[in-house]
Amino acid sequence: MIPINVSPETREQFVRNIITAWHSATSEQQQCGRTWYRTAHELAAMMTDGNPRAGAGVIAALSANKSWPENLRLARQACETGLKSGHFTDALHKAAQIMAGADPADVLPMERKTGQFFRLIANPDDPDAVVIDRHAHDIAVGETYGNRDRGLSSAGRYALLGHCFREAALRLDELPSTVQAVTWVAHTERIAGTGTRSSRRAA
Image (cartoon, rainbow, N blue to C red; front, top):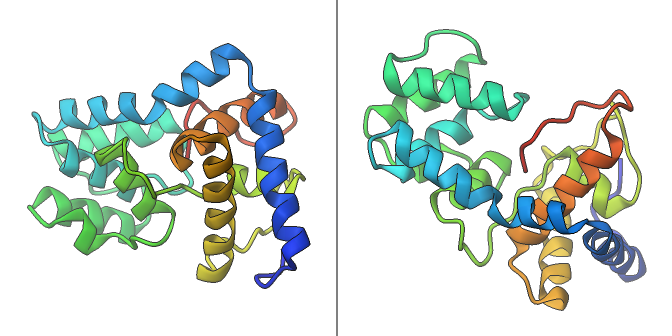
């Protein structure tokens, strides 16, 4: 597990690792990453009859430890008929609150992965939000951790990696979310078949 308080040199190495991953992406991976959150936004709107903010909240609430296809299946079910099982009780409760009219920003942990995921699906042009999942961690650190604990429940560690992606994005003149999504696609396609879970999702 990386320390929360790293040296400026280590922080700079994390930024360089992200930039290297960005440049390793093929043109197809670039295109997939660049359109990922916009496609998710459209899906969120479709499953809620034109309310992408609510749809984004439900998707984000049900995203933890789920592949993208499974995440979407659960979100669609929650929007259409309600959801009583298939996820942690807390996630089900948050999805139900959002479907009942609660603002996702009042329900989700906005400075953590699910909150940032919601922000980007609701607004793919968000200039600051960035999703830090296990793959984003590994991209920045420059090492695939597999099943080892990355400590991303720590607000400080999440903030550190988020800062590194924002700095890399600044140097690349891109949105942080675009850098995260493109590098995510390139990284997960590279490690596919190595025993770590991978599916076509950017978070």
